[in-house]
Amino acid sequence: MSLIAAAQWTAVATIVLAVFAIVTAVFAFLAFRAQSSEVTTLRGQLEDQKELNPKQTPVLELQARELRESIDERKRDAEDQRQSQANKVAAWFGLKDFGPVQFSSGPRGPSLQLWGAFIRNDSGSGC
Image 1 (spheres, helix red, strand yellow):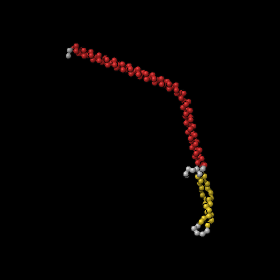
Image 2: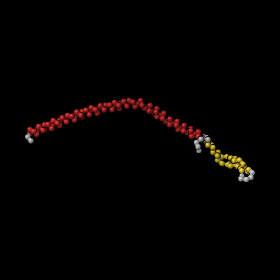
Image 3: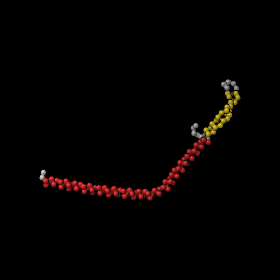
């Protein structure tokens, strides 16, 4: 290969590389602009959020207070329901008269009375 042909091939390769370098630089510039635009948008959103946070704080505190009150009310209602059911159960010690005892044959015997613990459940809970 002659020296002129080698120089020409080298010049062509250098031009091709230069063109690719320019194309790469253009793409890099476009990517930088897009990224810069996204960063600007994110900064704007961050500033908007900073302005909004102090306005949201009282609302969130109110919601938290209402949720606590709701939970407390549910606890009170559940306790009232348990107390109401417990008030319908009674227990006592006493003497119960079962009436005269009937033996298998013969006259009725004396009245049977027993001491014991008695429980009455009117709560309707099935216990």
